[in-house]
View 1 (cartoon, rainbow over the protein chains, first blue to last red):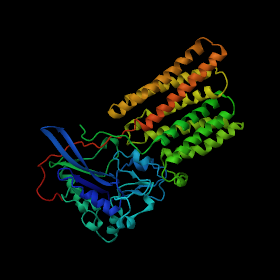
View 2 (cartoon, rainbow over the protein chains, first blue to last red):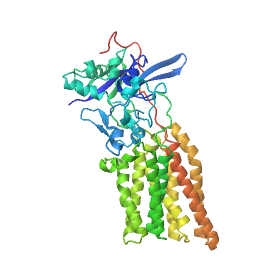
View 3 (cartoon, chains in turn brown, cyan):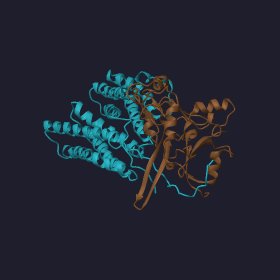
View 4 (cartoon, rainbow over the protein chains, first blue to last red):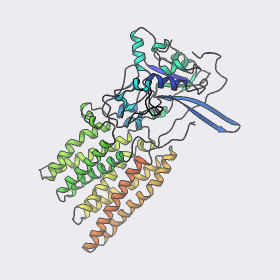
Length: 216
Length: 277
């Protein structure tokens, strides 16, 4: 079996938002919609303060609450772990948005552009099917499927890897098959301490955060 | 310890979503009350109209209303699918009951209970919102719908309520007050939702307590008919307002998410030089 997953190394992320920009470019999301974003968190009080950059987005959960609540089966989970959206079936009820504990879902009711009127790139990439329906990170599923069809390995070959991972300047993001013990993500999770967000909710996310070098 | 920003109020569901719980719950409560306590047959039509009003409010909220039938074409295991599947037979049974078709009234009452149960589970299944995913949410939604239903019966039936109706009203009110308290207590791990629930809940509890208190003089000391009617109407109106406010605020004021939370903060300087891959 295959279980696609993403790993974010919190020690390496520098908060440059290049992954955010790459995602917007690859998926042509409108202003305000960030399928991949990086949070800038600060903790503690002077002098004991810490700043952490946290990449977030759809966690492609093994037990996705969004799939459970979708009234039309527009949201599904594939056998390889990717949670998909069928824009043609979605009724835009936003139930998935309130069910998602990761605020990963977006719904835009009308077209909007970065500078008021649509630029040439925005005109070319505009997809009316995405209006008034739920949208979210797909792990760049088209790239993965296309790459696999061409014999490439997602997570290793850029043409088969999500845009955010390709773009990361700090090697903080990694992608691959959890069930392949030789994959980058499996190796990282085997060797380094990690956690998943809101794990207590039983969602079993496919997105891991590395936080320490020591093995578990 | 979890690290992360404060939760914020969800904006995906607004007053239109709340209206479905308000009108649908009260309408189902009325159908159930009418099926048990009797009353004029048009009460069933009124209950069905309220359920329809709630569903129309949802239709006004969803992004692609013309695709609403996809809920029937691709039904899932979602409680929203189940609510939609219960709605047509519920409306047919309610209309049949309003025309006096034999056996339709208890069927409408049973389906109304199913519909309002689905509404409770819809909220409870929203795992992104601590105030909704509380296990007390469903019983609270059902209990408040029952109280609202009897309240509507007291308002609309034009009949003097008997002891049985008052007893049912008192029971539903007491259960709603108790469950509301339990629900607020269940929000301990969600401080912002808890504060919002406390604030929004004060008028709700006051209204339900007022209506509950109104039952006492009616039961203990039979009043002149006009005063009894006035009290009946007042108790019904106040309970109905309290229930509506509870559901409105549940959706629009207490719907905080849990934000993002890190179980650990990264240990700096512990990594390997160069690429992590």
